[in-house]
Image (cartoon, rainbow over all chains, first blue to last red; front, top):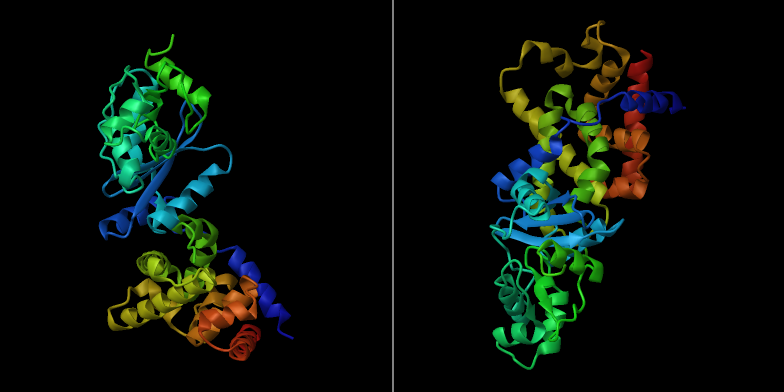
Length: 205
Length: 158
């Protein structure tokens, strides 16, 4: 019989401390970043549009996602597959992103000064989104104009799809692109969010 | 092949892994063992060919880090208050409480038995997974658990 010692081991293990330091996560992220091992850092940010997941690579902001309950996991798995599985939660590394988003939603900021990593927006999608990034606060454009600016005047539908695939909504302001004639058109986070943002920017009353 | 985001591993396994480091490397080396394990895992992670047995993979790294730390400690001056942990169970000062005495006894086992005893008795790890961790057959994993527990029991009762 060895049950006695197994019980003693289980009880002794339950009494052991379960963490090195309270803040081991940020310690690890810091060291990982210093050694070039942190490919994607992420954080969740509260906003008037619900919780957002924001993720950055060493090059810049790479993803911003609206998350309903449970959506965060899906976003991170997608990043693991498309960019790198070396993903750690590291709110400090996203402080500047959080600060600028807070200011924007408070009506105190009309542009973002964040470096962008365009890795998730290649090819035509990238062209369309770079066009979109140049539309100023309070202005709007149309799918047709954006398609023309991206070099394919006829690819209006493809431009719409590209905007729907925007990996960094809000910061890359795809909400400023409307249908010719003024109808709002679709939005990656739903029409209500598009309306909210356009109202925030004074485009809609 | 789909590897989960590394944060998932950290969330799922860090509590057990830290206890493993304290138990097998000693509380004086646990923080180093723990941190070095996670850094080494993060370094190697994208090169993994499959996402099977990630826990076994992590604990194997920790086992090897504990061995490395133990070796390097043997080569450098040891602070006085760490001496009892290095000695065998019989030499332990009576002032130590029962729990630390048990872990000191665990640390006198050969490394594979140490790992086997912890993972089986504390985590209830299936033998198939333990065999993957030890890079051995399931039979060998069973023998490591059995022999480790036997030795511990003899020392514990003594």
